[in-house]
Amino acid sequence: MTPESQKKIFWVTLFGIAMGWLEAAVVVYLRLLYYPEGFTFPVKGVSWNIGMVELGREIATVLMLLALGILVGRSALERFGYFIYAFGVWDLIYYVGLRLVLGWPPSLLTWDVLFLIPLPWIGPVLAPVLASLAMMGACLLIVRREDQNRPMHPAWWMWIVEILCGSIIIFSFIVDYRIAFISEVPDRFHWEIFFLGYLPGIALFLYAWRKSDSSLRSE
Image 1 (spheres, rainbow, N blue to C red):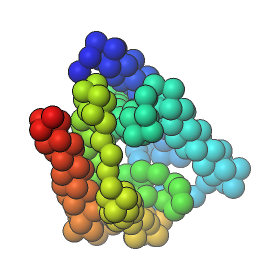
Image 2: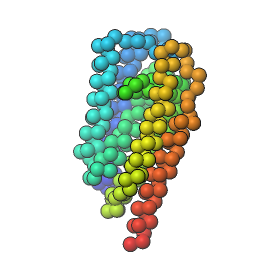
Image 3: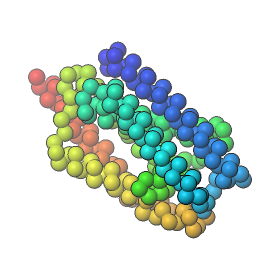
Image 4: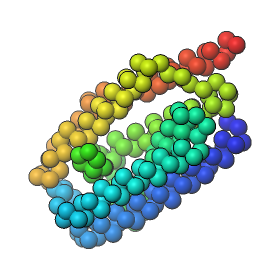
């Protein structure tokens, strides 16, 4: 990785850390208001106004991370890579912040409400952690290709499959979202659905990356 890319990774990482801590701080306040005895299921309802504020906050967070990727990246794929890298750092630091301040989550298998768009996402903390690590790793590999002047150019069908894999992962989070509002703790997370999208998505990305690596060595 070139010094310029190392510098970008450093500042994007710092940005993600700051945003993750800010997100954790907001959630600390919300949990003290709505869950003074500690966060647990079932999820408590909020007023329409607060619900809209939360949706707006999530949309704003994604837009800020996306804007960062657009400003830093050199190509469309690298911009997307920096976006998902910042997203991954933000998500990991968010849980680190909650752990430091609230002592929560007690374990990686603790259930959480992960996101609200388009429906509430629920799942054990381990699931978004795995997704975040995969996104961060993908970005580093994309940047490496850009630095070698050999950017990845995935075929159209690869994009379709990757989108499908991502959709399957999201489905694993929202398939039982109603349970979070009516039961103490969901019975089980659909790991079989999660890994049906997670593992093939990683495998296909690595295939596309190695394919460009082979093309580079052959020149």
